[in-house]
Image (cartoon, rainbow, N blue to C red):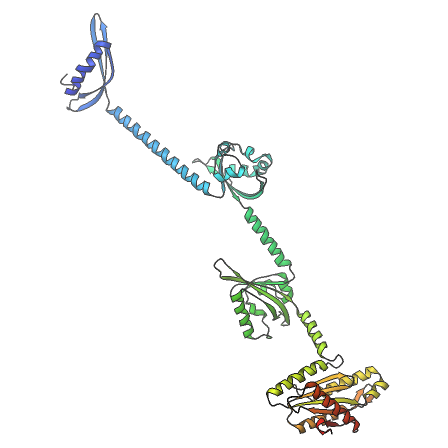
Length: 506
């Protein structure tokens, strides 16, 4: 015993093992130590059973060396710990993935090849209005309903065949609202390439659809509106134009895009005008007014133009949008109406209203600076006879001829007007002298007396002229006109075809 067992094992045998054998005749799995041939203590399990044969008691001892068993148990323990660690990490990763997917606005789910839901994020569950427990394990057809499921069958078959799927759907949600979705089905393959199921990624694109509809509507309005629209970058490089732009300017979109907006600049405005326009546009963000522009054929047209600056979130100007229409016809009509209001309809000369306006302006200027003003009142001699004998049409032709002759003899700063009938009035702005006015009056009588050829007729008319000179600052336009009118009547009395200054009247 001393050879096989160390002291501690011998004591344990004496105090525990032998008493158990004597009592029960059996001991199992008693852990002790043995001493091997090298003198090393090794762990063993002791099993012993008492048997009796021919009244002879025998004890059968079996010793199991436990070193391998202990190593196996240790490995088993380590394997169990590793499994627990892997399970913990797996749970941790699953929780991490769940946290991420639940935080995403998209709908994410996993369906096995039998179309049973194995995973769904919070948004997916919320979308269909059921709880998580009901979602996991549900059949896809039961979730989507027969109609929607039937529409999705081609895509389901496609993804289970290994082909990724992408498609849009208009879906009625459980709460009755209508939503638009973009769906992706992605196949899940194992290491052998077999399809186990597929991932479903669904994005709610309702807002994008609404924005797209708004953009399409804006684009439709952009194209069909009758006003021309031009969009430029901050440097006035043209980015986009509509069809009305082409109609109004003659430039196609291809010809205009990429060019500077100065392409349409006419010579009717100064550079300072455009600098002021641009300054106001940058400071106020908008400008509205009328601008003369140039078409592709180099003709000018007047446009009613409204420009707005478009800014980003940082208040930086990203583009300008100009909306315009051709108002040339309106302007022409306004100019014609203005001309008719201030000019004689037969001769095109200024009428009494415009003449008196210019006369009053010159008198006001004469009060501020030294200035001569002469007013000549003409009445045609012999015109009534021509009109009565030849008719009003010939008479009108004579009046037009006289108007042209008078205008050709005057400077641009002077004014000749027709007051009606056969009366003409001339305003000389700052003539050189009294004698110079007399020379002009004589010359006018000469040109009026030149025969006027009308068809086979040679017609003769003359003129009597009364002249009024501005005498002092207190004279009004009406007073000066009356002086010249009175002088004209005196000239007629004195024999016609002559002129008379009002200062010579007694």
